[in-house]
Length: 381
Image (cartoon, rainbow, N blue to C red):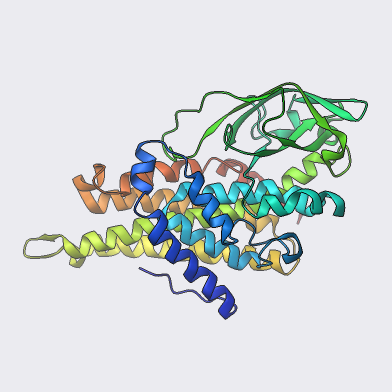
């Protein structure tokens, strides 16, 4: 059922309506089959790029939609409610563009950003490593300046779009100065020395390719460094704050889809002569699911509105990611329970929703890391 939203203007209402229409026409008929076959929906992403939805939060002058995060995230939520892989891909792409859009020079932005946010190029965000996931400051991938190029060696892990991206925003060590020794490089995916390992065999989001990136004497022109040398971790963490809001919106969309499926089933399924939705045990379960979805939506929107006003939002982004993804895990699990045995089969999408919800608690910082972030803000007072 359509979500009753309070959007800031008619343009935003039209954007959300367009996203909902595209989802129903172009995504809904293919989502279940594509996920079962582990097919990456590249054409769907090109379509959303053509209509401007891969660059919604970026400026008009660079080909973006110049929309506030409050609007962009609600569009993302609508997409996630139909096909999470597509929404997650958009969120990752928008995050991969963020360092260039926010910390790049005018010349760098004018040269590369329009094609990126116009949908012609798909991005990946290469931060994590096999032994440096929750602790990115311990990364060992290293770039050494050789004339006008950096030579990069190392391995990145758990990279969404590995093997299908056109570019990667790559965080790499350029000195031994701990957290201050990391820099941000923008590299093309077809560069010699860059290769993707075989895809990970994931529990959910099977349409979304995730793999290691291998960097073996990869040469990146020095003019593709974003920001100053040593500023990479600051850039990475800033991007993650916004990326966490994207994942929160995806989680709410997924939870909304599970709730809608559960309500529809409970209205249509009869036992003891009446619809099972009329039994108090299920009434209360569905009510709790609805409350969780609404609360998570309000939390991410509050963080987005603070971001749009230029206010600090890092703590609330962590709260939103934590609350929304935990809610998605609970709501999707409860949706399976509402459907009973039917929910445990692949004849209904709720079993897929439950498998997909799990990873939302893990990437863009595990929910344990979100608690660390929140606690540190509290300690700093």
